[in-house]
Length: 132
Image 1 (cartoon, rainbow, N blue to C red):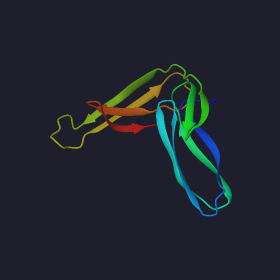
Image 2: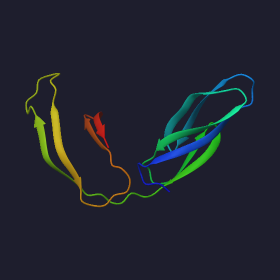
Image 3: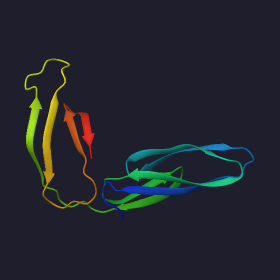
Image 4: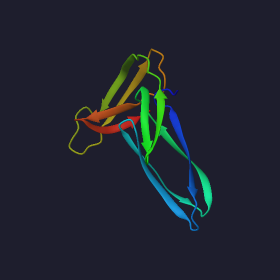
């Protein structure tokens, strides 16, 4: 069981039973999210171990699939948070078109929380910046 935002490691073996090197590329899903693996070169007559790191924020049992192979990851339910924003500053206060604007603030959470938090700045619904 993982905390929200904690790295999950999907581990698999790839076997090439042919006599020439081959390449593997896979597409997968975990919950509503898509991911890809590869391309990975696999030498002839060889089995290699492949690890893929996934980060999931949605709590509960998240079902996944990679090229027809099912798996699941269980994510703990995040605890309640209490975010406080202070020292908010926007500079310059009057900007012209295409002028760079700096926004700074201090963000704190007074409650314990599992996993990692991510802060996203949006302007008119468009993601401008994201930090964790």
